[in-house]
Image 1: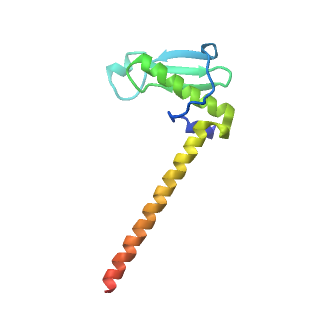
Image 2: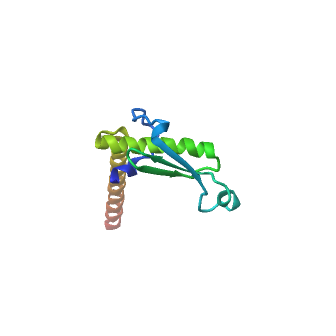
Image 3: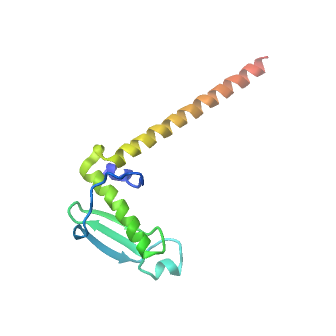
Amino acid sequence: VPLLQAAGKKNSFNLLGLTEAELKEQFVRGDGPGGQATNKTNNCVVLKHIPSGIVVKCHQTRSVEQNRKIAREILQEKVDLFYKGEDSDVFKEKKASEKKKQEKKRKAKENLERKKHFKEMQQLD
């Protein structure tokens, strides 16, 4: 299950394909801010991949068609992660971005230490 949190990356092209027969699609009312546009229209898309049991709920836009497209992309990435695990491109991208983020954080910390040390040296003079 923690692997599925890596989905959401848009640069993956080597994903497992989905067929419409494997999907169950529902349109429900969205929730959250947006007032009448959200609360009275069924523009939230819920997609379920029947063989794996993975469910995706998408309510990013007010358009049903855009939500359907986005939900399919997210579901495809999650299904790819489910079946391929750590060999999935999505997982590898997530790990690479986390490593890059940690490196950036480490450099910022080193920079801060250097500045602190420099100020201390100026005060001693």
